[in-house]
Length: 306
Image (cartoon, helix red, strand yellow):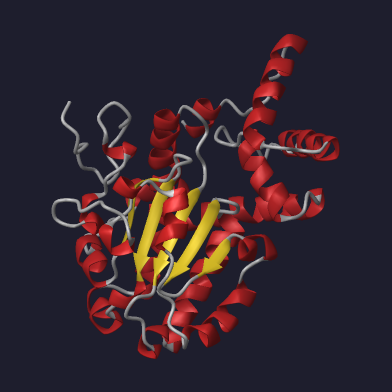
């Protein structure tokens, strides 16, 4: 499990054990002030006393909700409780097993989106090629509601399988992604009212129920006309998320290569990687290496040879 790998949970027991775990938590959590550290401990104790903590909820998880709400415990608690209620309602805990999405391959051809290797910090790189989206054909084979459920399933795969594999590869706790949104070929047709509505729903889902998983986002090949659309989308994002996003036109490769080794970055983004069959189809990354693959991501065997 992710929390076992990261060793973030502060254990109850002897003072020596707690001290050791606190040191490890601080190392992983980054630079917490004493006040933030105390708030984390109080937040964990409150959730524990009210039987709201799950086995998977390490201190890194709790920090996500605290950071998303400015270390305001009542607000973070309300956000955490809403997340638990939503997960129960949608069946997120078992969605990998219960939600079948046979149109996945066809959907990815009409709307290329994929994880591809890792950046220099060991984070999985997630890429979307919005300019290749064919919405009319997409809606012939699936629905927006099914796309939302598929999106949740992708989140669960990322958290339960891909992050742990990246953490093992990097020998440190990896729990954020580098996202690249490629707008090459995007026209106003791609940003129809229906698409904007879907993006808004996805954005709200991500921020409310999967907070602070975004490490950095690059929006690249942005046409001049996109600025108006970005002005509409930006207010949907909280302030912390806005600060993690960079908007670029056609000159962006040098910026990406500061964070991603050339051999890990697809050629169409300025790197040197050209996976057999296309980078968008390879799903290349530690999660598909036999030594890190603890389970099949989509009820399929690991691609790496044992």
